[in-house]
Structures are given as C-alpha cells and as structure tokens.
Length: 466
Image (cartoon, helix red, strand yellow):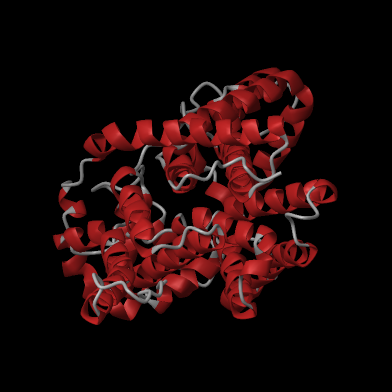
C-alpha cells in the first residue's frame, strides 16, 4: 500500500521534510478508500433511515421464528439476518459493506492494481453507476452473488498470490454465499465445472489446489444449508420450491395452459376447472390472489406442479427449448436496479411488526415506506452502464479466446461472462426473467471493464501475456 521514497546524493531539491510529507500523504491516501467506500456503499440505507427492504426479505427473516421450510427462502440467510436484529440490521449492512471492500481490494491486489487512489476511484464509479450500493444496503442475499464470483475467481486463478489465511476466508465466504440462494450455488457450481473442463489447457493459470478448494466450497455450502434446515425445522431436506418456480415460468409462457387444454379431458388435475382463468404471470399465480391459494399453495400443489412440469417437458420439447432460449436472452437484458424495493412490501412489513415490534416505528418512518425512492431516475444511468459493461466484457473475453491470450484480465472477463450467462440460464429458464436477478450480478461486469481500463491507462495491454 505504501511506496518508499529516497533521495540520491546531491539531490539538493528534496529535503527530509518533503520526504516525510509525501509519506504522510501516501498514508492518508491509503486510509481514504477504507473509510469512504464502506460509507458510500450503505449511503442509500443511511439516507433511508433503515436498511432497504424487498418483497422477499420477510420470508428469510421469518425462518428463525416460524421453524419450518418455505420455498426459495434459505435458512442460512435467515440465521444471518437474525444475528443482526439487535442492531436493527445495521451490523448486517456493515458486514456487507466491509465484505465488498475486501473483495474489491483483493481483486485489484492480485491483479497488480492495488494503489489506494485506484481502489477509490474504481469503488466510487461502481457506487455511482451500478446497483452495488443499493444491494449492499438491502436485507437480501443479492450482494453475495457477485462477490462470490469474484472470490471464486481469486481462489482458482490467483491462489499463489494470497495467503493461507485469505484462502480460508475466501473458502468460508464462498460456501456461505452458495448457501444463501440456490441460483448463486448454481452459478458457482457451473463455474467450477467450467474450470475443470478448461484445466487441461490452462494448467499455468489455474491452480489444481485452488480448483479443488473452489469445488469443495459448493459441498460445504450445501452441507451448511442442510444443517441449518435440520436445526430450524428438524427436516434433513433441501429448501423447497424449485418445481413451483419452474411451473410458474411455464405458466407465463403459455405452456401450462396448453397442457391443461390437451390433457384435462382424460386427466383429473386440480387446475383443470381453472384452465381458462390462469393469471398471465408467474408472480400473479404464485404470490398474488389466484387459485393457487384456494388449492393449498405449495403444500397442496407441489405434486401436481411437478407432474405438469415433467410431462410438459416431454410433450412440448421444441416449445420448451425455444421458451428457454428466449427467457435466457431476456434475462440478460433485465438489469434495472430496484425491482421489489418500493413502498409496497406488505409481507415483509408484517413479519417485522409481528416478530420485531420494537423496530416498527423506525421501519415505518423510513423513506422507502413513504414511496420516496425513484428507481426510474437511477436506471436512466444504471441500465445503459450495465448493458455497455456486459458488451465490453464479452468483447474482451471473445478477443482473448480468439487470440488465445491467457492473462489475468482475460481470465476474469471470461469468468464474468460465463457467470452472467449461467445466471441468465438458471434464473431466466427456471424463474422467468426479472430485473433483480440481472442487477445483482451485472455490476461485476462494470468492475471488470474498469479493471481493463485501469490496465490500459497504466500503459499495459490487457492481452499482453501469452
């Protein structure tokens, strides 16, 4: 972080006082990003007067109190939220901000770009132009999605540049992140698979020990989730809901309605009487006031939804393939900041009022609860930056592959591109395209583009390494 300065004999123009002044200035610049970046990362929550909430926050928070498993709500993340309740969740936001600072500076350090002022301007640009501060200020799993991709990259490709303690810290962080959300686990698992496939050609860039450790983080994350599920619910089971979410995407694409039309004459299904009344979107069906509630929600419909999902895959393979491809492309384009973070999150309000009533007044006084956050204005900047960053990173990755370049920035660009594609496939095909799923990950493309720019401005071509 610091650089020694000395004067040669005869350098009459440089005094000891000047040397000390320059060293003091450098020490000050080293501390500046460590103070500024975390504060700016949680600036939206500080302005709001309370951590930002989202539609799904209450479902995670309730896991500690309700003691049973619900679809798509990780008990590991629920325990993490419960840990910060006594501080009105400011401990959670503080940890998220510090984890972000740690991963950002560690990435820059292993890539040889660790100067304090560079960390500061890259950090501030990310804060001003991407969703990063909004997801860091929110009580949701999203902040760990992008950070875990960067952590995995460091663990696999930069193992020789980090200490054993840092390796242990990265291992624990990635394992925890993979346990907080199934889509994050899926993306990390896919990256590990890609790493194993590329290893025969990238033995000099990929450490075998790092690849093994990265793969074990997925195992550790899965074990962590199963252990939390047992501890809170008494069930040795995975977090439910995958089938229902996939069913919702097929409903939204019209596949469920067609299946019911083709098969209700000879199959007794609970949805048959409602086949002409299905809502237009998965969110309306699963979370709105639909017939799903009348039929017992997930407990009453899991078996039937699973049956329809499996049968429709066999019945309409080309339609399913086309729908999956369209959903993947649409998910890549859904990158707007702030989905589900507005003044209407009644379930989350209800959970806080029921289980943490002491925070009700503070929560209700926040700007968010008075509809004072306008993401339409924010997204005039965030969306074009996100889309431009994705194109830039994909271009860097494609150029590196075409020219067979294997430098660190090229490897990072390829990793991020694969992560974005994997995220689009997993979230788009299974859940259906949502802006939230794109925004929580696309900021790492902006970070990668800034790293490439920093390398270029520093006079080092990003494809210089053979």
